[in-house]
Length: 131
Length: 475
Image 1 (cartoon, each protein chain N blue to C red):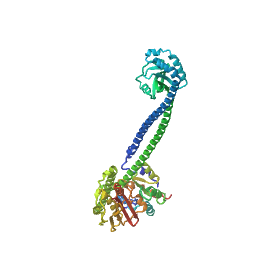
Image 2: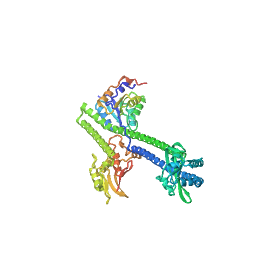
Image 3: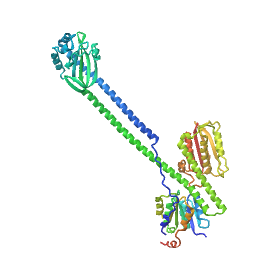
Image 4: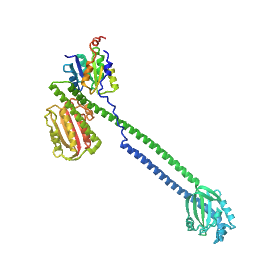
C-alpha cells in the first residue's frame, strides 16, 4: 500500500533514480523534477507529503526551494529532506535556517534515508496547519 | 508544522570527513632564482663599490702627490735660491770627503739650521734634508741624521741624475723638527739642486698631506655611504616586493589547488553516491531480475565513470608534472593518424563512422602519436555525445600557411557563447545533469596536449547548428 506522495528534486538523473528505487516500488507515489523551479511548481500542484531536495542545482539551490516551500502556507507541513555533498556545520545550519526537516549527506545509505522519511511526524500535525 | 530539530541533529553523516590538509608549497624555483640573483648582484655591487673606491683613492692620491710635489719643488727653489750660493754651496765644497762625525760637528750647521727653519715656517713642509750628489747627508732638519750615507737610496740616485721623484708615504711615527709625529701621510720628494748648470746636490723634502688625505677619505665615505645606503634601500624594497609577489602567487596557487580538489571531490561524489546507494539497495532488498539488472547496469556505468575520471586525472597530472618529457615526438603523416583515430572511435550504441577528409600533400608533422590520438578521441567523443544519431561527424585535415589544421565537425546541439567560455575549464560539463558520460576533463586534456605541440585549439559553435573544433599544429 502506498503511504504517501513523494517528490524528488535533483538535476542528476542517476540520483533521482537512486531515490526512486529507495522509496518507490510500493512504498510511495514518486514524482520527479530535474530543477528547482520545476520542483517548486510540482510541489504546488501535487502538495507532496515528502520532498527530497538536492542542494546543488544549477538554477535554484535546494536551500532556496526549501525556504520557498516552507513559506507557502499550503506546503509548510511538507517534510523536506535536503541532500548534499557538503557536510560542514555551516551547511547544515543553513539547511536548518531554510526550514528543512532533515539533512542527509551524500553518499548516503538508502535504508537510513527511508528510516528518516518513515520516522517523520504524521497525522495530528498535518491537521494543525490552519494558521 | 515546526521543523523537527531532532531529525536534523540526527542528520546522517555517513563518513565524517577529516579536513583536507593542504601541503604548504615550497618556494617556487623562479623566486629562489630572484633571491639568488638579488643576493649575488648585491655582493657584485659591493665588490664594484670597493674597487671603485680604491681606484678613486688611488687617483686622488696621484693628484695630491703631483700638487704636493709642485709645492715641494717651490720650497726647494726658494731654499736653493736663497741659501745655495751663499750657504750650502760653500758648505758642500768645504765638507767634501769629510767624515760623518766631522760633518755633524761643523760650525756652519746652527746658522744653516736657523735659516732653513725660518724659510719653512708657515709652509706645509715638515722636513728638509740635503745630500751631496753621492748621497751623503750634509744637512737635515733632524740634526742627528747629518752624516748618514744614503748613496743607495733610489730617490737620491734618481735626483742625482736630474729627475724629480715624489711618492706618498704613510708613517705611523715620524721624526721631524726634533719631535715624533704620529700617524701621518706625507709626500716625499727628491729634487735635484743645480749650480752653474750641473747637479751639485739633492734636496729631500717632506710635506704633510694628512689633512688633504683625510678630506679624500671623508669624501669617499660620504659618496660610498650614500651609494651603499641607496642600494640597501633599493634591495630592501626589492626583497619586500619579491616576498609580496611570492605570497600572492602562493595564495593564488593554493586557491587554485583548493578549487581543483573541491571540484574533483564533487565530481567523484555523484558516481560514488550512486554506487554506494545502489549496492546498499541490492544488499538489503530483493528485486525482480529485470530491475536488479537495471540496478547493476547503473552501478557498472557509474564505476566506468570513476575509471574515466581517474584516468583523465592521471593523464593530466602526468603531463603537468613531466611537461614536455611526457611526450615522445616523432615525424608522423597526418592521414594514417586520422584514419586510425576515426577507426578506433566507436561511440556506444552509435553505428556512425567518422568521415575522414585529408587534403593531399600535407607535410609530416612532429608530434606524439598517442597523445594527439587521445586529444582527437576526446574531441570526437564530444562530437558524438552532443549530436543526434544519423548526423555526420567529419574529421578533416588541411594546410594553411605554416600550420596544419585538424578539424572535428559535427552537426550537433552546439554551444552558446557563455558555454564556450567554460569549455576548457576543468570539470566543466555541458551536460549539467550528468546523463551523458564524461569526466569534464577531456577538453582540458586536449588543450594541454596541443599546447605541448606548440599548437592551439580553436572552437566555433552555434546552438542548434553544430560545433567545429580545430587543432592547429605547426609544420
